[in-house]
Each structure stands twice: as C-alpha cells, then as structure tokens.
Image (cartoon, rainbow, N blue to C red; front, top):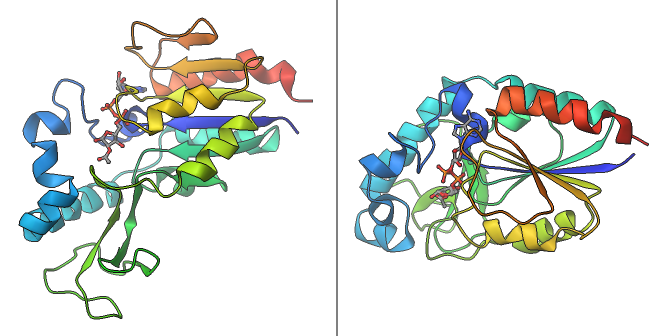
Length: 229
Ligand code: OAD
C-alpha cells in the first residue's frame, strides 16, 4: 500500500467545535500564549495552566470527530495512513485512525514534572493543584510547551521522509519545528494543503485545496483514489 502522511493542525478539529489558535476569535486572541502555554508560565503560575488545560480537556470530551477525521480513518482501507498532528485532542483516535503521532502532546495524559518518561493516562479530566507523580513531584499536563523540546520530532521526520503522498490540513504553519516538517518531504511526491485560508506563499510542489477539513478531505480522496497501488 502507498503511504499517505497527514500533517494536521487546529483547523482539523474546527468543525468539531474546538477553537483554533490564530484565526479571528482564536484562543491566542483571548489568552497570552506565553502566560498559558510556556514552560516559564508553568514555573510561575501552575494553577493557571492546570485550569487552561482542564478547560481544553472538558471541551475535547464534549466534542466529536468530524467528517474529516472520519474520512481519514476510512482511508486506512486503501492507504497506509500516518497522521502527525499538532493537536492535543484525541479526535483522530476516536474517529478510528490507528497511527497517530502527537507532536505537541496529548490532553488525555499527564506526566511527571521531573521525569518526562513517567506518563499516566488521566482518569479524571480535571487536574487539581498538588497532584503528584510516583516520584513525588508535581504532575503536569502532557503538553509540549513553548520553550521545550519536541521529543517526537525525529520520529515525525522519518515518517515524512517515507511519504508517497503528503497532505497538510488546517495548520497556519507558524509554529516550528512542526512547520519545518514539510522540508523533509521527498521532492517527487504530491503534496496537498487543505485550508479555507491557505498561507499566501507556498512552494510550487504544494497543491492547494481551499476548503474546510471535511469537504477538503473528500476532494483529496477524489484526487488520490487512482494512486492506491
Ligand atoms: P492555527 O490556529 O495557527 O492555524 C489554524 C489553521 O486552520 C489556519 O490556517 C486556518 O485557516 C485553518 N482552518 C480554520 N478552520 C478550518 C477548517 N474548518 N478546516 C481546515 N482548516 C481550517 O493552528 P496550528 O497551526 O495548529 O501549539 O497551531 C500550531 C500550534 O500553535 C498548536 O499546536 C499550538 C499553538 O500554539 C502549542 O500550544 C504548543
């Protein structure tokens, strides 16, 4: 089977009712990103970060995968689909996708603030101040914050390098190193970008589908259905 690699961002989950970051009414209009999503903020005001991510978790649990998520899961019948997502929600998994790499962490999990390998699945969606990991240090959301390394980057690069088709969905390509993943795509493959407001300057190799994720993935399927072998 051909390998279809998807790089998804906040726009992927917009039709599920989850707010993006940089659109009008995006989350970063309401919050200062460095106050709620940076390692400095965690050291300064952990309660605020716990509250911010508790809200995101509650919203995620009230949301359902949209048509875009469901169609990508369905595509596993015809392609080896690898999803690299910047999203911290679990909507790709709940739609049925089986190979999902979370570059920026996962809301469903928490981890030790002294040992990044000590990761637990949250049973209660609301994290409270004072909760501790097995090593006795504060438990923190399993999120990659600004100012931190992106531990899954090497795995993501290897996946992009092995793509037969690449499709970018719903990301403003503003945040690095995630946005730099495009540079690792083989030069001879087709690259699609699904976004109702696509970035203005894009390399020639990229074919734009200027649609929302749901209808955009439908169009993508029409374009790639003859490439299944
Ligand atoms: P952005 O909010 O920067 O970009 C969202 C993109 O989705 C924009 O290009 C929109 O045009 C597009 N979009 C909006 N609605 C859409 C829809 N229905 N279907 C498809 N696309 C749509 O979000 P990201 O690029 O994902 O990181 O942001 C990257 C990172 O910045 C996030 O992972 C987060 C944030 O700060 C951390 O917090 C570490």
